[in-house]
Length: 130
Image 1 (spheres, rainbow, N blue to C red):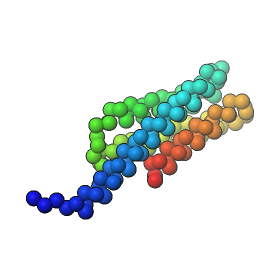
Image 2 (cartoon, helix red, strand yellow):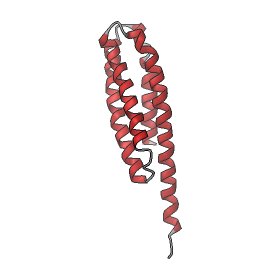
Image 3 (tube, one colour):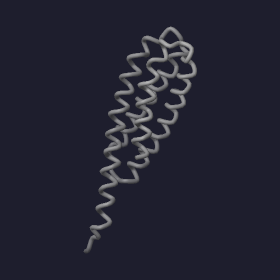
Image 4 (cartoon, one colour):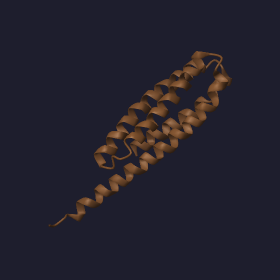
C-alpha cells in the first residue's frame, strides 16, 4: 500500500500547531486564574465590582475542564472543535471584562486589575487566530 507522504506532513504540522495552541491556552488560563483570584478578595465589598472577576474565574476553570476532558482528542478536527469551544468561552470572558471596565471606571483602585486580565484575554484571542 502506498501512502502519500506529501499530504501527511501538512496535517502533522497542523496538529502540532493546534497542540501548541492548546498548551498556550492552558498556561494563559492558569495565569488568568492567578491574577483574577488575587484581586477578588480586594473587591469583595461591592458585588458589581467583583462580578466580572468571579465570572472570568469561573469561565477560566470551565475552559481548563474542557481542555482536560477533551485532552485525548488528538485529531485535527477534535483540536479545532476544542479551540472553537474555548473561543466561545473567551468571547464571553471578554464581555464580562468590558463590563468590568465600565463598572469600575469611576473607581481607579478597583480598575487596576482589569488591564492584566484584558491583556491575557487578548493574548488568547491572538493565540486562537494565529
